[in-house]
Length: 115
Length: 113
Image (cartoon, rainbow over all chains, first blue to last red; front, side):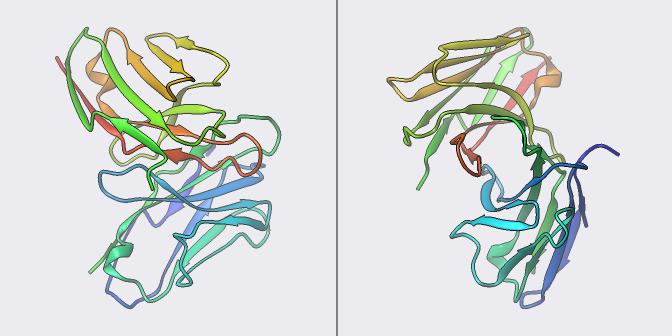
């Protein structure tokens, strides 16, 4: 499998519960991104990893959100105490370190519904 | 704060026609402008991209036109086909640093057979 994979593809949860999503980037892609896409909008940047280091976080990433990439391979995004406003598609993308304007390859996303 | 504005929100074109989607940006630090195509249930996929030192780039039926002074760029799809029906996003980023993408709001394109 050569693409970015994300699990689960869909998650329905009740308000106040914690959820965790996983992203497996393309092998040897050092850079990993998380974006959030709400209905009818373009994706919005959440956070960026280079290897295991989280180098940038958006102001959208409140203290209820945490992302990790412990060994510089897969990444997890956790949302604590979910709110209805967290309902969205969470997209992961990866790209290689080398090169100037390499394409970001996106996964299929995890669709979160908070009831 | 919307740094990249995209129009129209939706577009219906007859098969064989030309589809045109427009974007405008505010941040003059942006120096790379990709277009992404997204099908339902899939993540966005890169379609074509341009740097601001080039006024036009063509790849097959897809052309980007870029106007640096106006801070505008557009996507033209020639000989539009039903398989082109998808949501299209313009985007921008700064090459130095994280290269985080800033997306427009998207255009839902429908090509009628």
